[in-house]
Length: 239
Length: 315
Image (cartoon, each protein chain N blue to C red):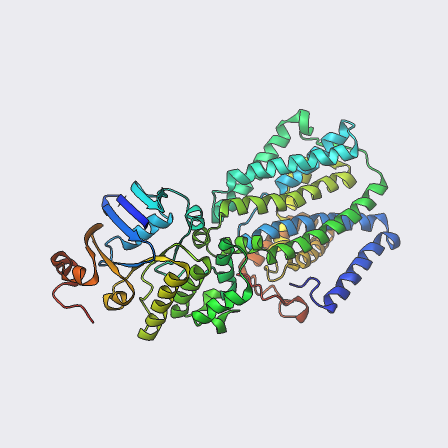
């Protein structure tokens, strides 16, 4: 079953076409990587799906319902969660309170279940510290801890690996796989570290200048001439 | 939370309650009058803080519901309605106008919200001057009161202040409190967590306005008059704000300490340099805004320390 179907999605900022006729299908229970150079429209796509930006044209079908133009909180309540490329903590609230606020969406979560999420994200020692004072890597995991508390059907993770070391990336990857298996979460993950993305994502989508230039398995996308030319250049993929 | 957490808190609360209850028996009606004025400001200050401390939105228009309550009650009494009916009508008017203004200003953010709410005060003031048949114009409305009214107002005010304090503590622990604090923490993130910021902002504004409005009703009930100046003037519009932000929002009782400091300062200014009272209070406001942390002499004392781990931006 398709959890997300995007049709003809376009968006312009003034004269700049950020997204042009983007189409995308996301299967249930899968992790899909979305790659592309900086400025290719990945974050804009996430902003449009999550409602933090209003689409100017096109359809975003989530479980068959067109959510394009819905308010962010309505989209979140329907089961779409997202993280931000620049970590955005709820300042003035502790780490535990950040996660608790997110858990309000699915009703009252027990303190134990919230603490378990913190342990999974290695945040248990920071539970009572102000979220604004966390280190960068910890903030990345806080972003994930919040969406874990929401048990989303569709998760948009915007460059979750950037700024993390290899072991942290592995931990983050495992958490994404676990969410897929435990909650049936379908994930759209963006990033540049294609080697790491290939370990979690079944499907790859390549964006360039707001257009989908390739999609398919990792090997299909990495061998696609358009991708090699625009995104990977002449060097080979790290792996 | 400082309230009812430890035996120490309960002892302090009981002592405070006993002292408050005893005051009218052992002092003159002048003192009761003075304390009424302070408690009216305290109620406004706590209601300002209810919105400000948790959502971070500075509602400078708290005197609008105050004035609506004060005028509606005076209007009803001057038309010989029964006191009960007058109270009910006043509360309905407060709820109606606070919901209406809440819906209008909910789209404003940051400083624009503060300016927008302040504009509502000027609007209300203009209406009060111009709708003579309703408000009595420049002269306002005079209603007859007895000495007994000041005493009943005293107890009701003390009770409502306690209620609002407990309500603030209860809200902070509730999921509603979490939603409001997430709005202060990061409104965009809050919306992606499924939180309807607009609705929460309007609801908390209505709750805050209700208490400010009841303070208005009570002030008419013992003062015996209402004018545009007594409702929308500097003292009701700005004093509660200074009181609330003077010590920062490190604890929910901070506004009450602020109230005590500002009320005392204001008494001293009025008796020593009456012409400069507003000027001096303005200086106090500027200092509170510039040096929030330095003014908190009491901040680190054990008594005032935040026991629940709830933090605020200014602490």
